[in-house]
Picture 1 (cartoon, rainbow, N blue to C red):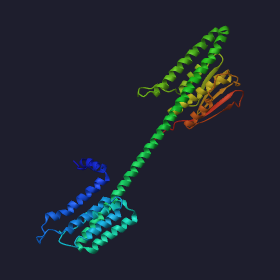
Picture 2 (cartoon, rainbow, N blue to C red; picture 1 turned 120 degrees about the vertical axis):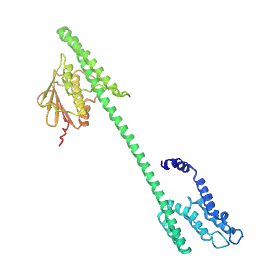
Picture 3 (cartoon, rainbow, N blue to C red; picture 1 turned 135 degrees about the vertical axis):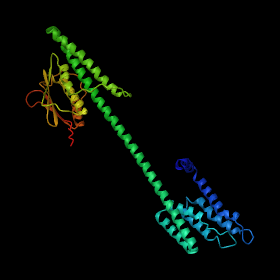
Picture 4 (cartoon, one colour; picture 1 turned 120 degrees about the horizontal axis):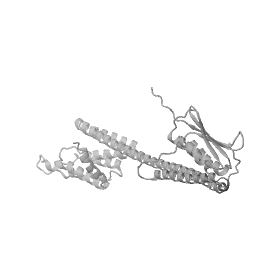
Length: 389
């Protein structure tokens, strides 16, 4: 088993300690290590070690308490004390490096480029100038290694900070995208509810108004009008239940969405004593993406609803033209805009354009070019067939 997972809690605890405690512990550790020879070795002259050695050991370590605030000054103070170790009295032969190593690490970690490079040159150059060749080589390697570790620590922290910043940015972008997706879904559900309720209510109102008239002139047709009212109401309830199922949090089964094949049923339900709606198709039926198929149904539903509510038409024709890459849908009526004054949400034609555009299609609408009435012309893309080599 690797020792890294075992040491990780210790590292985490150390990182959580106050910086002042860490620096004080470093001072104690450096003094203890550099003062160890004073207790473990005996002066060849038999006299106690000179107090100067103790003072230098302390002077090289105590400045580390301020290493985070003034790293360059601390390094200069520590190196100056170290250079004075052998000047007076009998002291144990030892390198006084540890305070300087911690200080050069801090300079590499916290100082700007020019000061840290200058201090590295001064430190290594000074050790080469005032010590023997063997000692100079070892001290030079150690100071360069401490400097490199300090730079590596800075680079690692910068990289970690960049990763955290990037992760936070990705999280923010994900939140924004989720919010946009929720807004798009709410808009889609609002369009569906508008189409369903508007169509059903329009059919029921028109049939209800035609029923009493037919009751006196053609009782059998009046019965058909009332049947159409109940059918439209039940159909609206079923479709609304589908939408409510989508809003549920569980992942249970969902009712199928309406398809192109349901347009004939839509035409039959919209037909009544005063309006005949037909649905015809030309060309070979081709596959549609699910979103395009639902959009096609809802577009026709909204167009027929507008005919029922506003056109005052006696006939409306739904025509599907299947082409190589495009499905063309036309809804033509023979009305003169003299329909019953039913409330309008004002979103019908806009909703048709939005649905067509959302799946890569186009929609145009206006007076019929071949006679009285209104025309809705929609082009929707067909699914791309995959060809495998």
